[in-house]
Amino acid sequence: MTRLVLLGPPGAGKGTQAALLAERLGVPAISTGDIFRRNAKEQTELGRRAQQYMDAGEYVPDEVVNAMVADRLAQPDAAGGFLLDGYPRTTAQVEELDGMLAGAGAGLDAVVELVADEEEVVGRLRRRAAVDGRADDDEAVVRRRLEVYREQTAPLTDLYASRGLLRRVDGIGPVEEVTARVVAALDGRA
Image (cartoon, rainbow, N blue to C red; front, side):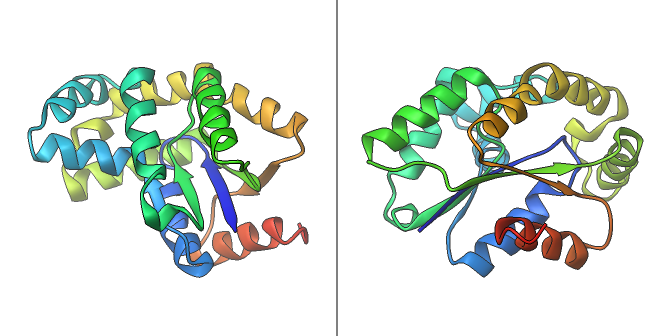
């Protein structure tokens, strides 16, 4: 059974790596960003609420995110493991996830942090905005998202390191090389 969390700043390649790793490990990649965007596209109440925060580069409130993740983890395809991308983002969400997993008699196997230079991720996200037209990839919004990451999410790395779960991996380079680094880190070879 594999239960992983993938951390890293916006633009570090979490979504790409999550999809590749989930396929390789045979578990679902659960991305809060994808869930938010799907709800926004479908104009659900949750989607409208989430979109307001995302457009400003802010995090969606914990109570909305926690309920959504709990519901997703309760689905049958996540019973054999999962890879979380974009959750948890705050220490309060870590506590909530700990409670969800403890309720199922489980825990995390590892937390992978993709490390990337800030200017590199700004460039990546500006290119993505030009291709995909995503409003949340505007440079001012991107810089705000990076600031929010440093303030709220980066402290989680210390928490997970203290639990012996954290694996730091260089997220810059060709996709295949980054995937190989992540696999090596999970196998204890890095």
